[in-house]
Length: 612
Image 1 (cartoon, rainbow, N blue to C red):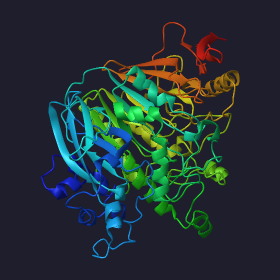
Image 2 (image 1 turned 90 degrees about the horizontal axis):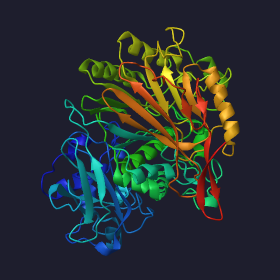
Image 3 (image 1 turned 180 degrees about the vertical axis):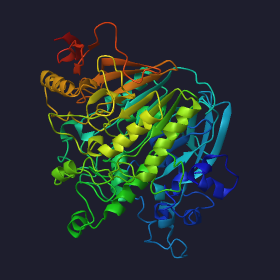
Image 4 (image 1 turned 60 degrees about the vertical axis):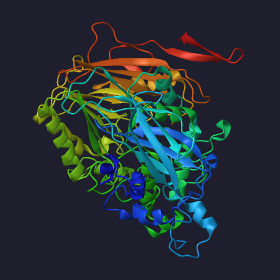
């Protein structure tokens, strides 16, 4: 199994190859996503043809999916930032066992030897673990590794074997032991929806500049698949998406992710924090479901328009590239492209990362079938997750509650709460799968599962709601009585406001007021700001702080504190302040909007706060 290979490796050349777990398929059900280590090893020279000085750590380092005893480490080592040789000469065009293969082909496909080490000290003097691994163009020169100790900050670095060519120094952290007490608070940054042509990823860098969190949670739309102009023009910012067409092939997805990873703030976030990511839809395509997407299905016309690539092939390409570039592990490789998984942060909280997009989702709104999805939105058979993931999710919630874990944190892609938008509902979110949502509510209410917090992204706006099964349970929105949990949904890193990229603050807040008025369980809503939120989790309370980025047109470290919310342990609803609630933007149930904003003085180049 993939994750088992992170444990201490045996000596010898083969162990060095298996140390790079990207050679293995993300799923046992799709072995074609793996790479033959035997064939790669056959290209290894007794003396490497690579000059260490000609190789570069092109995209820094990253870490992710921390366990109490291990974490994934990542880097990319290559002769150039481009990946134009990836999966070309090694994909069947050359018989790698023929004696007629010329030296040039051998050299261009020969694996690169990389050493790594990890330590609790920045100077890496006291090495906790180390090893050697090979990587090659088969997996876009990507490498992953490692086994560690519980709840410890580590520093790590890679180098080309037998050389002083080193990567940047990375920092990571394991999570608390499953049955142990956690040092509190534990802090998380929650992100989603970074669109390269819409501007700079300043939000990623702000937590690095503040050094304010322990871990990063990413809820998807890490990349977008569109060509320039279809969704965002990057010309003005020098951020035209590459390749400049809608992506379909493995090379396309690799190149697009590689471009996103050149953003300096994303680069810094990966270097400083361990990530726990999950995909949304755009890592593959817009509005994906189990048999297609908004722009691709298995019809002949769709197949031809996509350049002869089927739905399944496109998803395989996207998933292969995602697992190469993201510091992520498969948890139980007995399933069909599974990414949903669980992390136990001691007895403080369990983090359940769901896949409500790719795994087994029933048909969604594909733009041409909107009325149909509205008509079937409350059909009892509809599922966002598929029966296997659904039952796993409910079991995880119950087991976590029985263990006495203080909190249950659910990372999912789309808005869980009902969202009445003046009589219309978004059937691409949980509103389009009401029976699935009701089954989730029933599991929470019937089993008296407390302290459940849903996290969401996708909508490019901020939402904070009590979780209540309206129509089945009484609810007092003045006190929160009747609620069974809380939902925090964050805005985008750079993707535009759903009401329009150029909307004014006043118009956005007017729309937010309307939404809060239509949804009594919705306690705060903001459409205007791009940004993120941080969670500070303790045994007695959980706090959420939302931050807005004033502009993504330039790279900068500015942000505004938009709002702060508290959930007290056992309350299952947002804490109602004794005094009048105050936020900086949007609309707040029974509260006040101050209206802080930033303005830019072009003469001085400075930003100033003003009050409306």
